[in-house]
Image (cartoon, rainbow, N blue to C red):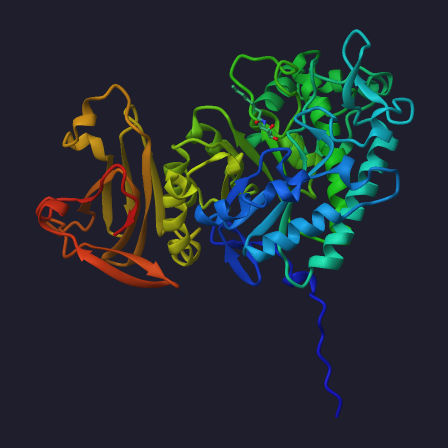
Length: 522
Ligand code: N0T
């Protein structure tokens, strides 16, 4: 009798996305995983000595996933000669600190520019042509229209994915890949190089025309508007179908960026099929494409990316804008789960992380330049992540099932209602009580949290700076009141109650409250 045991992972065991109700979850090692992330500053991961003191900081903040660039210029310093030293050390150090990795492929484009391409690409503009502006001036941006550019990127990215497969398939420290970084054209709405101009005269591809026709009722605003104005044509050049405007220039370049990213993604997945996504530098209202990076995976043209890059698992927003809810509402769709790969690292990330998990069933959250803090243990984020980490078995089990919601408050938007089970909760910023002297301040710190129904009449609340009252939706119930409130924590998924909160702490049974400055679970 000879026993045989397979060691190789089947693709089903790789990190992958899976639906639960109407939420999409990241599955790692067979279980849903919440990425309590942080993205490194751009240059930190080019020197593992520099990184040494960073790892313990990350652990102190309860970061379980690091988003870190892999730089094409350092991966392939000479054409065809790959150096995996940095990647190997990165993976080794991440493992030693029980941290997962999302690798950001700084390949052809990084914030529009091509600053991470190796010097043999940078200096050979004949072989690796650049995008041009309207007046024919070459940019420090590879054109997406040159086969050589795409092939060189694919070669390098494939080598990377092959190496990760060969060295990490068993342990799966690398769980996801971002393809390129904040793709978008500058300084004009589209590339005006000769190859680009030629492509612009070509008919709009059938795939795209088919997509816009099939999805006519839900089309992204800029696409619909352009197509409508030009009379809903179903064949012809880009200007025939979408009219002559900057919107058309953006649609055109978005399609070609999407196709390029799609080919890179397909090539990588054919070797090692990790989930892959792209991120967007958000635009601002009343700014023209080209003044912001044109044609990135932005909400007003999102369908172009959905049609042009089906190999990508989702598209993500980077937050350096206000209006957190506004943009998240646009990115969270049935065909697009929410993951926030970058957000400016400031105190408000703490309540925003709660809101992302509770309200959007977010797959993860990741402040940018996470290593920049000097007091990691005291960061509001550390307190928020500690709570989210304890709660993750419950939040993950509740996603997509109408058992959980989140809330986010400032002085202007200080109240919200949440319905769960037989109850309606009126949730408010703690300062609406007026009990704190700071309630008189001009500005209030952002606060927020989440609530989960854990049994018909039992709810778990977590967050900071919130106060909650509730009423029953049962027609026969004259009042709804508090039986008991316990604060506590989860240790290895088991609830360990601390104080019984009553009297002043629940206002003699009137409300549930987590004051500003405290981060807790009740
Ligand atoms: C981000 C980061 C990094 C006042 C900026 C944001 C990262 C990239 N780009 O630190 O460069 O690699 O993805 C661009 C948005 C800036 C808006 C500034 C508004």
